[in-house]
Length: 298
Image (cartoon, rainbow, N blue to C red; front, side, top):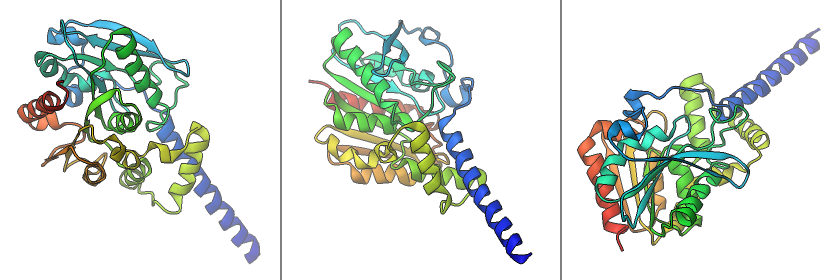
C-alpha cells in the first residue's frame, strides 16, 4: 500500500513537472494577439499621424515569410535607420524615435517581425528565427533602396536580435539597443519567477529543452551576450531602465560589460521596460540622434 502511494506521488510530481515545463514553453513560443498600447508605444497610427511621409512596403525572408514595414524616406539621405521592435510589440514601438531621426536627415524603416498577427502558426523564438526578418530588411535596404550606411535601433527582443545580426553582418554600422536581454533563458527564468512563482531549477532546463525542440532552434544562439563583443570596432549604445521589471536592469549592465569600445551606456534611473522616451523624451531623442550623428556620418 505504501509503495503504491509513493509511486503515485512520484508520478504526480513527474507529470506536474513535465506539464509545467510544457506550459511555460508554450507561453514563450505562442504569442497572443494584442492591440497597440498608447501608454507604451505612444503612436498607434501609421506614420501619417505624425505627418511623416511613408511607403507601405514588404519583403520576403529566406524561410518564406512576408515582413511588412513602413519606409520613411528623406530626400537625398545617405543613411538609414532600421527600427526593430520587441517580442510582443509591433513596428509602432520604434515610432517615438522616427520623427527626430527623420528631422536629423535619416531615412527610417520600421519593420514588423514575424508574429501570429501575420500567420497564426508563427512561433516566437526569442530572436532565433527573427534574425531572418532583420536580415531580409537589410537586404531590402541595401539591394532595393541602395543604402550602404545602415544603423539599427532595437527594443527588447528586437535589441537582442539586432545585436546578434550586427555581430555577423557588417552592413550595420551603428547599433542602439534599448531594454535588451543578455541571456534569453535568464530573462525568461526571471519572468517565470515573477509571474508564476516558478523556480529556475529543476524547471528551466526542461523548458529550454521543449523550447528548442518545438521551436527548431538552439537557445545559445539567442544570447546576445555571446555576440556583442564581435561588433567592435563598430559602436554600440546600450540603454536600460533601472525600474525594468520585464528585462532586469542587470541585463543592460552585462551587455555593456561584454561590449568593446566604442560603446555608450545610459543608466536610466526609474525607467521602465523600453519606455525611456516616456521617462525623458529630450534625452532619449537627443542622445540617440547624437550617437548616430557621431558614428554613422562618413
